Image 1 (cartoon, rainbow, N blue to C red):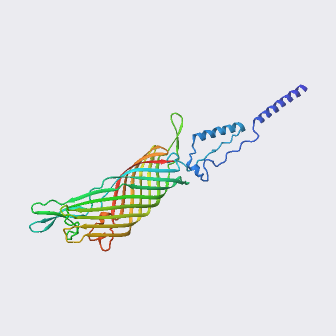
Image 2 (image 1 turned 180 degrees about the vertical axis):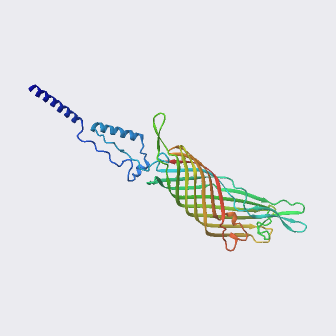
Length: 434
């Protein structure tokens, strides 16, 4: 009996020892489950710094992993770690595309512009030396002049990102300047020498009136010059591509790529435009000592108004293409000035001298449309090229004010304010983000 009791006691002790050993290997309390809400998808917007600082930094991620591993080894913490730096907003994306707080767009542009409307300043008159009768030959100095050459200019934009909203749209403020060299063109008309009983001379219009220093001229020389400048301040809202994509390459490493798709922007702003012109006609007759005439007109169009516009780009890996444009309604503050002088010692008429000025306000329009294509050098630098179209209307063009009897030379001076200019040309530029 004693032997059986000792055997039972030994078996019971072994069972107790084994049970204690198994209990020691089981933790007293299980770790708490992770919270149901993810810290990656925040419920409130991040700080401004996190909007413009990429959360996918390889250095930061590597440092976070090492720090978490060390903590787990020391404290045996099996709770899933969360991000420690700037966190990804629920709709935040496209850090690679147009990354920065400031941006600038600097273009070299070459534009052509249309000439003013036609109409003759003066015509050639043939006089029959036998009968004394005069007739117009049909040759004249047209106010439209020769085709104006291409002119180079520059366009620059400086912008600052103000905010990025919950719909993944960038809000920015930008200022843009557009300016050109002067479009300038010359023209002339020379009367033919006497031929077969006819003499030829130049006569300004209307041909049935005499104007000292311009009637009976041998040559007319005209010069037309136009200058365009623009300054605008805009508030722009632009959406961004989808979330950046992580793709594993053949070497086993992950790389980030911009999501392909369309992006749009819309802006509203204030714009001021200056379009100043000068038209000058001089007349000479080398056979008459002291004969001279000068007809000079200056017009200044200063436009101020509001505009709206936007762009639509198709974004691909490394390049993009699309269109952009704007349109605005302006108040044009017009100032016109005429200075006319003529003298002819061979005529009994007194010298011609007129100096008149007129001002006016009229509605004007300016619109632009550009077809663009660009290449991404990196996330901070892009190059692009485009074909630009523009229309400027409601202007007082200097050649269209010419008249010896009306407009600026009338008893009550006024300007003609229905001029139109159409521009088209090419632009190439560099876009930078920092």
